[in-house]
Length: 406
Length: 219
Ligand SMILES: Nc1ncnc2c1ncn2[C@@H]1O[C@H](COP(=O)(O)OP(=O)(O)O)[C@@H](O)[C@H]1O
Ligand SMILES: [Mg+2]
Image 1 (cartoon, helix red, strand yellow):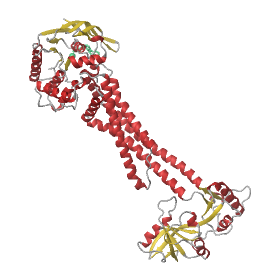
Image 2 (cartoon, protein in one colour):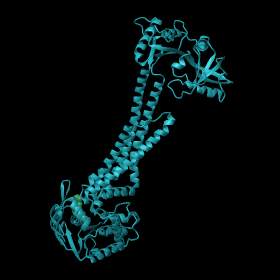
Image 3 (spheres, chains in turn blue, green):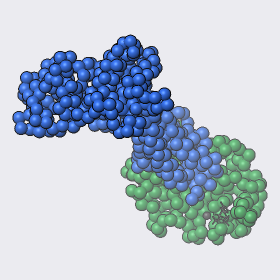
Image 4 (tube, protein in one colour):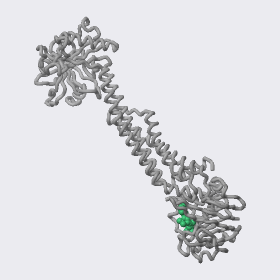
């Protein structure tokens, strides 16, 4: 019998046993689709978070108080900012910004909503890659120097408080005091931590005197964090050393004393995230692996359940003149067709699921060729092994043994 | 011509050896209609399976039309089954969920006939057993008698010289059985060799000659 005949026979057989064919394919489809969809989503999350971390600016140091070593009092103040901004003391730093923030009710036209109010230095938005305005402008040095009662609103704040109204020039009230809206930030979308879209920015001096009057141990007005831009990424280690030296000196920490601040670099953040993302990928991967296993067991079950029927079928075929080779080729082709078709449908379904859930999770799913090949290879392998198994066994039997198989 | 000389068949059942055939000498000439009778377990089916190359004898020699079949390779035996022998079983042994036409075309496919040739011949064979209007029916859409006739059409498809039937009427009502026997008689009339196993003396009466077997030997 030639290959075309074997092929047509295989198709005939698959069509004659539609239920069996569909159930077998279902195992392949489920296994492959689950693996592809889950890993595409996992990879998408990793890619989008990595992007976000890098978009913050690749050579930014974030300095915060280390509460464990500061008796629970904030350690950082604007004096530290000035010290770090001195190019003689910290030459590896290009710019230094600071902020102080907290939740506050923000009122406009009788509507009151709680937002993060962030008191910032004039250069804060630029250093944090946020200086992109859909209306108006940022803060000036003068606003900060004169305790200006001006505010910049995030896009969500504007949408919620102002509806369609043009906000620049209007006033919002925070803690009973009016602030003139001078600018609106362009929409930032998803970010790590507090969203700039839901934040109101005011001068740090105003925030310190009117909203967040916390002091450091030495009595200076405290800031929450200091953002320092390193001259170039290569100087990150130098910059960390310089920041440490300057702050220890400013805070009068003795040689044996612990730092009362901590420095987080972009590299640290990426490393931390990489660890989280590896866990996520391993988690999704094991769910995917289980799905693949379940699919494989499904295929195996259908195949094994039909062994008796198929062995008898082989007996009949041999009795009327089929050669061992004819049987093996037919079964191989049947399994191959089911595996390939199931694999293709599984890939299609997996990619479709990934693409449909992507927007809901706010990520771009990443389908990797290696995943597709691995999942399809595994499912197809199981399909082939358990599809050919009865044929391989029965084709070697005497026809009468196959006919009488129970 | 079928010629068996001192053919034995022993099955191993765990520790036990079952001697199903204990030295059978048998000659069946071309064009004969032979019935094989004997009590249950006497070795009738075993004998038929050896004659039909569905099983190999443990000892002795078997020649079919002068060919030493017992020495042949598996593939050569498959060819003999395909070209020279047609089988009819008590339980029909049809492929499930497959149309009568495709059942009958099966031996033709393994025999290397082309697609259109196969279907023409299959239809002719089905018509010859009175199922010309049932070619697209599947086994579960046919009565027992009709299924057995599909099996006979399949046995006839490659135009073999021998029909081997193992209790072909055993699973059928009297009237269907009657129809099957009439078909066999007609085939015999056309010069075909027919070997039919039965335990029903009335059925055996239709044959020219009855061979008795008991405990694995011809009596
Ligand atoms: N595959 C087998 N394995 C073991 N014993 C078998 C097998 N086939 C048949 N036998 C034994 O061989 C003997 C003859 O069986 P069989 O030819 O089927 O008898 P009959 O068809 O006359 O009823 C019986 O004792 C039966 O149990
Ligand atoms: Mg029997």
